[in-house]
Length: 431
Ligand code: HGY
Ligand code: MN
Ligand code: MN
Image (cartoon, rainbow, N blue to C red; front, side, top):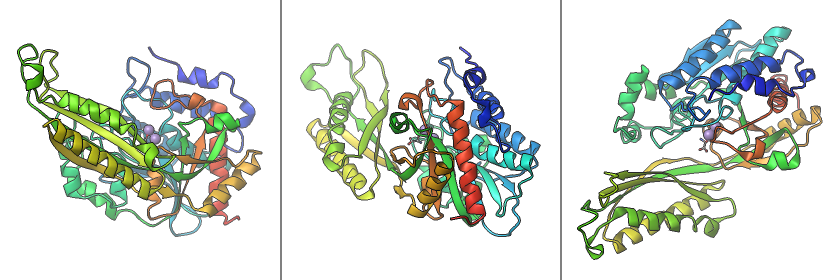
């Protein structure tokens, strides 16, 4: 089913919002064109990190960057930077996000941040505005981590926060290693790790992203300020029993890992509320081997995605969950493997940057709604070293990681104007 995202976005768009070089129609047509890459049967997109679909999406944005004369570079992790020289020498202000997606994902998660950053550059080209400081539009690889159950592997490589040992542990569901996939993508593990050496000093990083929650809708505001970003820990548990005939094996003579895994999954749900009001834990991925209806499973692999906006309670939750897995495996006489695929620090956003964002919202008569992000974003990785800020744009019904993900073009364009105003304030050193 091929949706015409362009038509849907343009329906009800207030053309008066296209001004100062910002062009809503152009943004709509680009969101539409990007949404065609990796389009699947349910009208969503599937663009895993380092896949040909992610590469195609980057190449489309690179074409748009080159059309407005932006100088484009890419690092060994496939991160793309479109650079617009400023009047002054010195570190750049960078804005961007990702174009990879979760399986059967939506059309705004990631692309809206990249295209909003590009739209600001294009608006300056159209109005002849020369930025005081250099400005870069960034696309970070593999933010979702859907293929390797890891996440943020592009921005973590860019920040030099990832090791060869860590990456060598990663295999996709077909057993392909991260290194093999990098080769198919056109890079090597050495070039990937070298990305960390190219990270020049960044003045400020700012990411526009859909909220993926309901607060802006409840507050009836198009754009909001992110106050902090929760840090995910992604832990892969492997429960191993013994595959046997489902018909001939008595119930009291089994080592069934799927029973143990299902007891564990039920237990996981109860732990977050024991550590804080903002902690969450999800099991969204589970693989049964050999996965035959008449075979007692040999092995079950599942990933627990656990998060909190405070590192201490996130780690307390991690501890509770791993202890529970060990307890159940022992009780059920099941072997247990535990691999921490990613453990990322939460990011509090600097008050001063939140204040500047509030000034930009104020300029468009919007309330400065502050929202903690339960979702992880590239801004939290860049923010581990450089000043970083995030803007949220309203999501319809808070829906995301779903083909029904929706943000109106009016709200998208409000996001671009706010980003443009914020970056210009930073450029001009305005308080
Ligand atoms: O999973 C997340 O938090 C984000 O969508 N990568
Ligand atoms: Mn996402
Ligand atoms: Mn995202």
